Length: 168
Image (cartoon, rainbow, N blue to C red; front, side, top):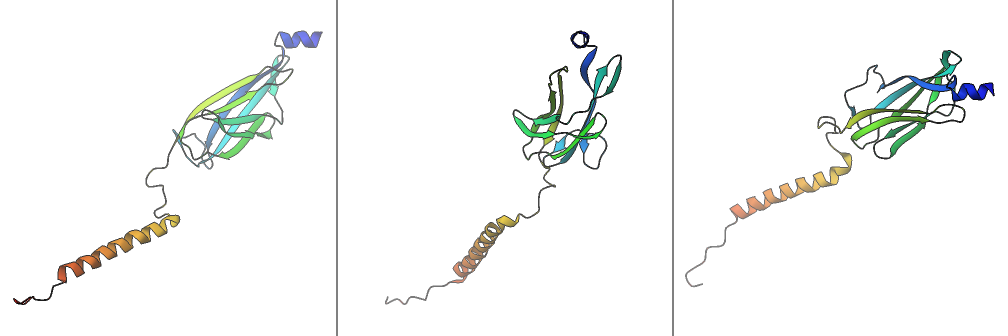
């Protein structure tokens, strides 16, 4: 009865998010906007109330979703320390406004719902490949057409009909 009343009056079993962070791999601060296909690190720190103190909450089933309208990425966070979780994933190649969502509901604990909104932009024109290898047949056809028009122009401009005599 004491454990049940402690849970009902939120003296035990309360979970909270201590900190959330995200950034590109190799950097420490979050950018203003991510670019498609970036590798991202997402970190989460959870705490659980035990009596009057907050202690790290350890679990192996905390999941993060990277959501636009529907989840594009759903991954289980790996524990890196007591109460600290991390995952590394690649942003999809669809730009828009996304959310990092953590929704954690377990029996005996209060629920967690945390969302952080980020923007994902397309590649800048200088970030694309200079020449796309699968387009080489199209490049060849364009250059062969230019060469053909050039040859045709030379032949057309320098071709002369035979002189016709008056009897013809």
